[in-house]
Image (cartoon, rainbow, N blue to C red; front, side, top):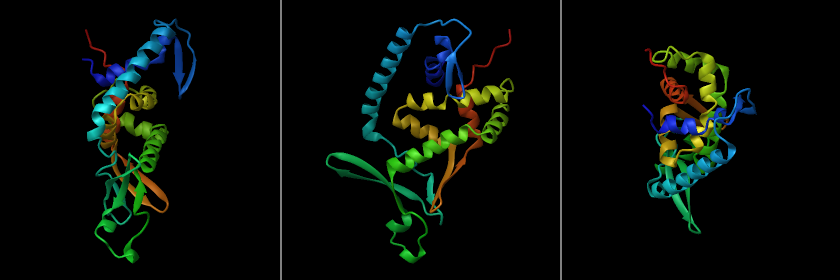
Length: 216
């Protein structure tokens, strides 16, 4: 059955343009295109316009991307808070230790972070981790429990499509993806430490991988 994830994957697959994609690099393929560039551009204009419209509807209930996932190195949760300046809405993640007025001498690491900055850093790190051989191998093992037909090469190619999937989602859908992929984020002076969910990695890879072939 086709769902939204599969449809978005197909609509972003440049193989249909007669191209070959390998490790984010696009090359001319050895096969003929089955759609032309004009149709591709028209479809992606519709996708972009739909995303803007859906985002406008969802904006009033837009969730904080890292809610319930981000903690200081002492284990205190960092909760999202919003402020408005000059008509613009800004999100910050603030440690519960600060909110509860824990003595400054007992605090360790950053206690308040700009939401956009830390969210961009987390997504950037997720993108990097999904490209590492270790994560790809771990994901392949997780996927094969339900999809033994998928080998590591197919899983790596599927994970490479994460950026296209991410760009096509509205904020609420992006938040659900992060909840699926991330178990915990720890903030320290050294930076961010992200623990990924193995089962979530498998689910995302299976979503973006080719559909399972039915046996006649």
